[in-house]
Length: 351
Image (cartoon, rainbow, N blue to C red; front, side):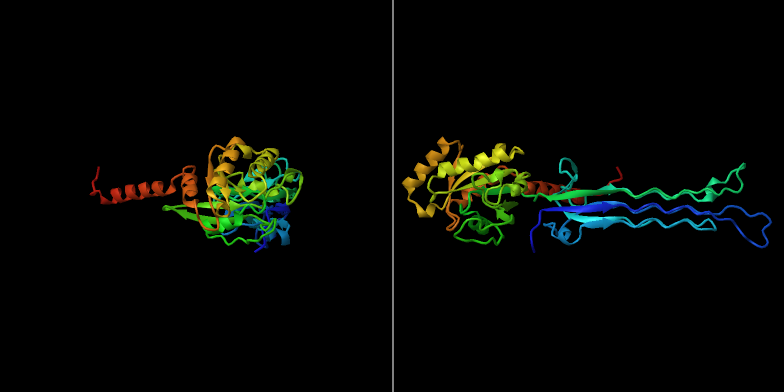
């Protein structure tokens, strides 16, 4: 499946059906009268966040969404049928933006969340509803409210607990493959990862989601390389893992380069908790690892982890530190289950 995280679509709700102008014409009824029914309501445009979707690829092939209009009213006081609402299903993490991308109209962060984006027009009144003691044969009716329309942008921000970043060839794909169920492409060239990857990590009876984004280079905020468009996918992460290649020319400079790009992007990414990780330590001796770790601390790193994504060295300690930044969902679920079991074990009492 192709990955698509931005799409522009057109929305149009349904117009209301017009009311009818009609009069009774019955052979054995002495006095007739107005019997035109009201029109039906037009369909709404509704967005709903659902499970099982992690891309906006469906919106590449369908950009126009129009709800049906309400049916018109008819004689014999028959009301027009209301049109069905048009429900547009989007992945969790999707944002709906205005056409100029300046305003966030809706943000879907939970499964089942629904937002009525455009309301369908109300149906028009038929002439039967205008009948009064002084207006016994009204001929006026209403045409029904018009539809609403707009262009919007859909932007997907993947929901992950942990974000993985670094320069190209820092070993991010190898790392996410070794700790999770992801199967990211690994290659000895820059920008092997072209789109974000998600993986589920299981460590010490805990489970969390990690997101790998394409590598950043100097000037990414200005569009260099793949640019910084994928940084939006780690905006919601609780902690970032910053991989630094120990075999690079200057690991400290590599770390500072990525930090500068995070600051240039904004969204407070540079202030998120970061775990600085020296990767590929299987290619260096212990003395060299210590020296580079000291340089990283001098450049601003609070703590430096030394790991090897290829051999697994040091990864367990890193994941232990990651868990300290994440909510303990396991204990919460266990406590809830224990409380439920205790309730079931209590003897019945009318009090």
